[in-house]
Amino acid sequence: MRIVGLTGGIGSGKSTVSNLFKAHGIPVVDADVVARNVLKKGTGGWRKVLAAFGEDILLPSGEVDRPKLGQIVFTDPDKRQLLNRLLAPYISSGIILEVFKLWIKGCKIIVLDVPLLFEAKMYKWTKPIIVVWVNPETQLQRLMARDGTTAEEASSRINAQMSLDLKRDKADIVIDNSGSLEDLNEQFREVLVHVKNPLTWTEFGLSRDGALTAFFSILFGVIICRRAL
Image 1 (tube, rainbow, N blue to C red):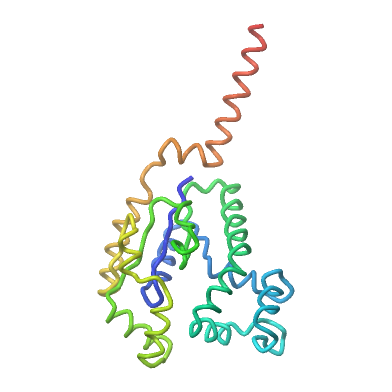
Image 2 (image 1 turned 60 degrees about the vertical axis):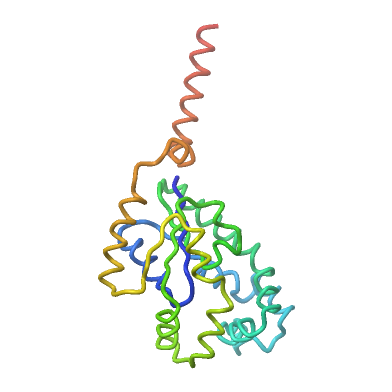
């Protein structure tokens, strides 16, 4: 099984690339979706965050007010690190569960869409690692246009994350999304060819089919040995 790491930065267009993978039939495990699920009312993550940040972060329904929580942690590095520490075990477990479900289905290629791929050390599970990069000026302008924020607010959110240049240096594949959507699609087509290359023997061995092949090979070997005796 090939687990592809996909990451980027806020306003880089990572979600667009993630959707392109889905459109081409490659399943994506989205860490943001998992994070939303582990914050649902009554979950372990919800209880941990409520104990740490207080009831002021709740909506009248009892669900976490995610925009309000986001404002708190993006302006306070210590609280951001605290939130990450509290939710990391739940998010990691949720991602592993989603990957296992896809493994059971026989999926041979899975994309992990994780904003904190490097920060959470999840890059160690993935190969290749794809970083969606964009130049700083374009990133700032896109974020301001998307969220309707000031340059100062957008810069604060960008600076709260690992820099895209540093992520780019750690990548196996870089998608430069500073241009048009047509440029992005052209780059994606090349990336897709690479991602769909035949599995290595190691990757095949980690797939469901590989595990079944190994199991039946061992079983056949045991039967033959017993008959020989």
